[in-house]
Amino acid sequence: MKKTMIAVLLTSAIGTTSFAALAQGAPHGERGQMRFEEIDANGDGDVTKAEIEAHKAARFASADTNGDGNVSFAEFDAFHEVEKAQREAARRQHMFGKMDANDDGVISAAEHAEHRSERMERRFERVDTNDDGVITQEERDAARATRMERRDMRRIGRHGQRSGGSE
Ligand SMILES: [Ca+2]
Ligand SMILES: [Ca+2]
Ligand SMILES: [Ca+2]
Ligand SMILES: [Ca+2]
Image (tube, rainbow, N blue to C red; front, side, top):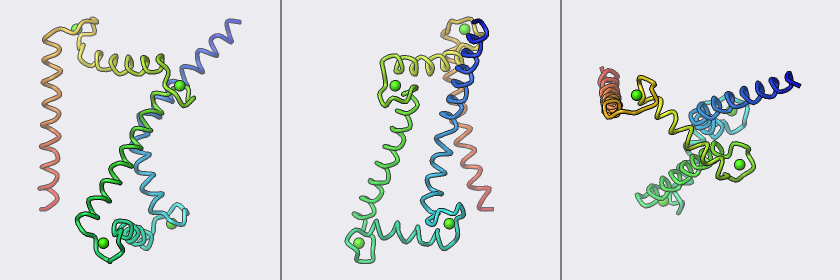
């Protein structure tokens, strides 16, 4: 009796871990894969130069909605609006999938609560640096400073990369 309990606990723990890892790793992997699959027209897993050219031509053709061989600003604008909407829809779907833990196609109140509390807990743990379960004003200020610093570092990093690349 006890053994099965432990086994169940173990499997559910493993299940949760792999799900969390999957959910965290998915956004980038999915996005990269989607593009790759899009370009790999014959689906052999390789992307050839010809396939990239064909993909570019297809994108141009779908942007050139009136088929006059040129993409006007209105066409360009509409094309990117559609792409943006598709990207956002995909992101929403991904978020929904993450929240719908039992995959039954609906987010129950419990799943919603669980998702929120997980995120809040993670944030709480990050800010509560001395782990006493209380976020003091100082810890909050420190967290804000760290966040700003990180943003600055990113900005500098991006800038540095660009100037480094042109040299
Ligand atoms: Ca191919
Ligand atoms: Ca056109
Ligand atoms: Ca559900
Ligand atoms: Ca604290």
